[in-house]
Length: 474
Image (cartoon, rainbow, N blue to C red; front, side):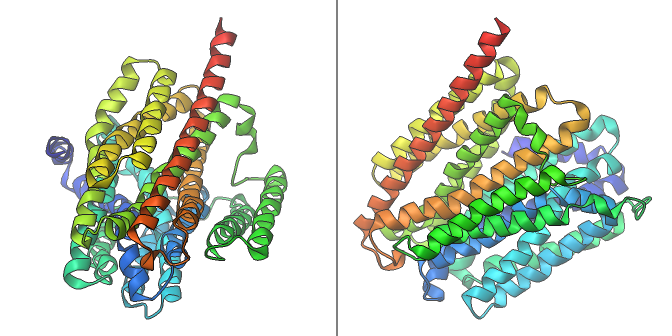
């Protein structure tokens, strides 16, 4: 990891001072949202205890953040074209920072969840617009290095979250995991304000180009879906069914609206490409499994295995650290081998890891499973993204990239809600924080048995689509 960071630092050092400061602001804009995603997961057991809340209630600390990001990640780039990217990015940084303060001082769980939604709104703006600024701040011949730097910063934020969160909770209490963002947010705002290029030609874009109806329908549909999977605690009642039906109806209404929108939030035409549609479906399934590890693992490690918060954070950092170390080798392997072959190899590794997570006992079993799961995920991501983007026309790359982000975030929401519901149901108690260690271990086993089934479903999709492609080429 040190060598990767050193290479990125050398790339920064070769830039003029103004470019270096601009890159520093963009790097922090990429780090903070990923840190915000991973740092809260390790705190879920502590937050459940602090607010005397159930597992299903504290899930919304994660879900509110993800819902805000997922709803806006596709459309915020267009909004930046309308209002000016620099202006909107500054607003996003400010929202993220102020919401972090509100999270840290929230007196009730539901005020914390509301603040997390606002924090997610700021994070969506930061994540979407940071990449767009690279072309405006870095010479063309250095664009690859800058993109690599931003990818590394995102991975570092994800890796840093669990361990830093565990240390902060143990030493200062749960508010510290949110308040740590404040000085970083202020620094990011100052650097961005002083060193990012001014907006040019803002206000000339047709405001009708922003799909407000699609954005609102997506938000309501995803919220209904997440609520259906989390309320009711240990039973799936009439309200859950009603919310699930509302999500299905909302999906139909969204498709109807997007088919008639002048500038649709979701390009329905992309689903006519079977390979692309299959890749998006696999991306969602795999992301569901990865999010399950972040939501379920803190309770398993703390309540079933008896680890304190510091050690929970350290153990949960193992996966993200492996992700940093395996990302570059995975990309090189995709360059040397056929992408479909690497997709299948990555999914096979993930399936084996999910089975291992379900059957191997104790801390050593968990670490062994994570050591297989994370490289498998990196192989899948690198190969799947390469396979998707290889045949895309240049003027469609932004749209397809947005769809990949959307499918990934839909998977993250499903992992936090549906897989969380499987975990709670399989544990046999509405209150995970008071459950017997063996009950939590049983919930862990069932959750990753379901995860293994999801990865096998992704394997079936991959086998089917790539077999069809091979036959057509023959």
